[in-house]
Image (cartoon, rainbow, N blue to C red):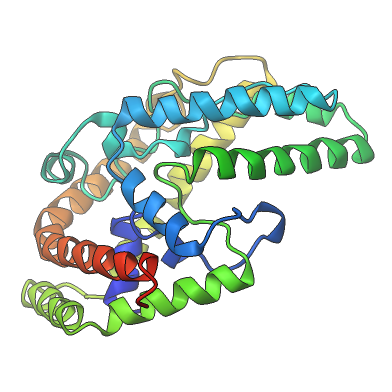
Length: 291
């Protein structure tokens, strides 16, 4: 994987469009893709309160949109709608010192103002397949409206693009990837990681993510069970789910992750900063019709 695509993981909001791998025609914003990409980049600076305020606006609009067609909708903010570092109010240096990459260290963390479980789930479970289809179809159309009205969400993992938009975004990213400054920064990043004895590709963090799977999966099962039993899962913690032996195993994983991230992330940050700068330059060119 190219280093620029690695930046998608590090700068999810800023590079969301470039991380998108497929279109969703029913949800395509009616804007030039470079404008959508610029809005996503700008949203990358939103703090926790701004992020929650965005979702409050969207939820209010979704509620009215659903109601207009006779559908009930319970507004909520999904736990993954708020970036962990943003929610904690930490700088990237502070976050790494305390939580590493955030893979094994924040499994049971719930950003304030968000929910672990969609409150609409139970109502949907009581519907017929046809009713569910109608409800979901209406929600998707409402989401398309809110996308156009409020712009891309902060901390989105990807943007839903049409084939035309996706092709255009790929051309923009291709220009950024080929920029000599980005190429050089990628070489410096790779050398920095390898000098410290680390793989410069994705395999490094994927190993940690794989090792943490049983803890994430086990915790998610416990959340689902609590919800089924009518209990609020917001206060659920790992210590209530796993044995002392399992928690000790997780603790070792967390220590390994933090120690590694403290060494590797300083290699990544200069690249991310440079990539964001160059990306903005090419977006400005695209918006001006020069690309």
